[in-house]
Image (cartoon, rainbow, N blue to C red; front, side):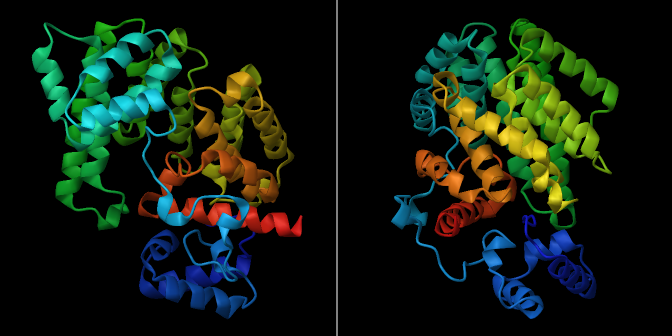
Length: 380
C-alpha cells in the first residue's frame, strides 16, 4: 500500500523505525502489518489523524457512508475489467462460459478500431489466463493461423505469468513462482512476436510487448525499438503509453523529469493522453508526496476533466479508465469534492489502474478514495 498525500513526515519516520525493528523495508511493513498495529502506530504519532487518509484500506475514523451521496455500498464493488464496456463484457462472459464465438466476432469487428481492440484483448486475455479452455476450443475450430487467436494468446500468457507469480513482494515469492513467471513471460513474448507477423498492421501485439517490458527486463534499446513499431502503427495508442510510463517508473532511481517529460509530450499531442500526467504523479508519489501540489498536475486534471466532458472522451472505450485516474488525482491533489461525480459515474466499477496496483487491497483503496471524496464535500 502506498502512502497518500497529506502523510506527515513523522508518521513515515515512525513506520521506517518500526520496519527496521522488524527487519523489513517500509513497503514490506506496510503490506504485512495488521490494520490494528498500523492504526496504533499512526495514533501514537498523531491521535487526530484519520488512518484511512494515510494508508488506503484502513478504517475511516470517523466513518463516511458513501451511500448518502448516491454511491453503491462497498459489498457491490467489482474488479471485473470487462464490465465498463458492455460489448466486451458480453464477449468475456460468453468466453468464461465456454463460447468463443462472441470473442471472435468482437475481434473481427474491432480490427482497425485499435482502442476497442486493445481493451477487448486485455479483458479476453485475462479470461483466458484464468481458464484457456475456450481459447483452445476456438483454436481447434480454426483453420490455419488466426491473427485474432494469436493476439489473445499472447496477452493471455502475460496475464497467466502474473497470476503464477502472485502479487506479493519478491522476498515473499517462492523460487517456483519466480521460475514459472519468467518461463511464461518468455512464452508470451514469442506468441506476441508471432502475432506481429500474422497482422503486421495491428499495434495490439506490439502493445503486449510494451506491457512485457518490465517483467522481461528489456534494456533501453530493445524497448525503444518496440516503441517505434507501436508508434508507427498508432502514435496515440493509449494502452501502449500507459504501460510505457509504467516501464519508465520502474527505473531506479525514478527520474521525475523523465516521467513528466514523457507524459507531458503525449498529453500535448492529444487530450486523450492527459491522464498520463496523473499517472506520472502516481508513479512518483512514494518518492515525494508533494508531487500532487505541482501546478502541472492541476492543469492536467483540468484538461482531463474537459476531455471527459466531451462526447468523444466521455463516451469512449477508455472513459472509465480516465475517470479512475481523474478521481485518484483529484482526491490526492486536495480536490476531492470534484471527484464525487466521477465516482458516481464509475458506480460499482473498482477495476483497472490505479486501484489494481494495490493487489488484494484494490477494492479497499477504491472505497477509501470514495470516502475521502465524499468527506471533502462537507468541508468544501
